[in-house]
Length: 464
Image 1 (cartoon, rainbow, N blue to C red):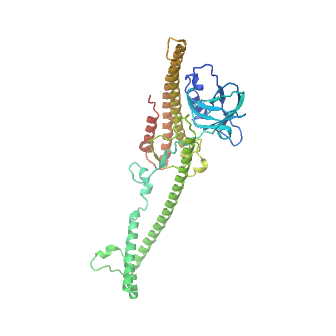
Image 2 (image 1 turned 60 degrees about the horizontal axis):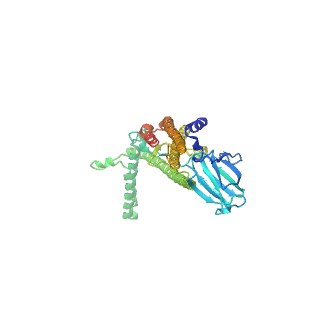
Image 3 (image 1 turned 30 degrees about the vertical axis):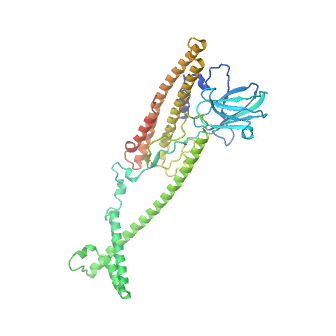
């Protein structure tokens, strides 16, 4: 999805939702909060970050502010300092100004600076209060990290060989390996029989003592004679010419067996290396995931209750021929770490991964906005006393109907974007299906991909 489409998608998705969404809800017209709109940090080394620094005097007992400009995937720090040392009570509000989501006091804070770590969608309020209004100078600094899209994890796992084809048989190029002489099974049988007879010969030689050395050698030589010849009465009788021809034949088979043994050893070393690499990769992923969980658990503080910080439960794991694609915090493919995957997968996997986070964002915006609307209606009903006969009650009823209308528009907008996203997800998975087929995975979408598609379809369908 192009950047401009992405901006328009969520910028105009909820046109019609009442303007009160721009700040914590209130029916008190005397509250005129100052907007703190985050700006891009243009300093070198701070690409993708947002921030604002605000100074003001506290001439009254309370000042109101609300922060805008951040996004769902930003991690936000709110720092408040009393410049002249006057104790300040600082609280954060989300749904309305009367419900405190988090609270700190500069008098108890380290170095006199309170620090809230939050993750939220939509604006939130900052209320500064003091019991000693003396035109006190205070500072609000709000910092937002670059977008981090990591918590959904990887939806893919390495495909097993028996999953490559619909029948469970190995691919044709693997099934034909070792053909002409009976394949790998026959080679292993030859090796096992030869080793067994060799051991018997050596043991017999030891039992017969030094005088039995010749007999042991003979037993070893006899171990090379085709076993079928001993099935005849009278044993095996060969002319010298037949014996010479037979030796050449055995030498040829021996060379073939030794070659196969060398190939097996090489394959074993390759498997050992793959296992070690896999262990290293798993350890890296676990470490990264631990860091992700720590980050998401640190930035909470009650303002992200409508935001998920964990992968969707019971999501199917999709087998794939290519599991070595790594995405950075922005959901972009990390090119230097993806030498093991073909170019074919890059764009398709990128589109697929992007759609997962777009669905999450769509669902989060809907839930957060719906929660906000419900809280506003509940708050308005309580404050107005639900008295239609009164002037305040009549004004609230008009506003209430506007909120309810906006919620209906929100539901319609969600359903439209949900259908659009399903199509984009299906397109991305069809591209993945083509890539998987190029590398020998038969009917990837019909056998594996559709399960994930159906999971996404069910999970993000609007339930109310």
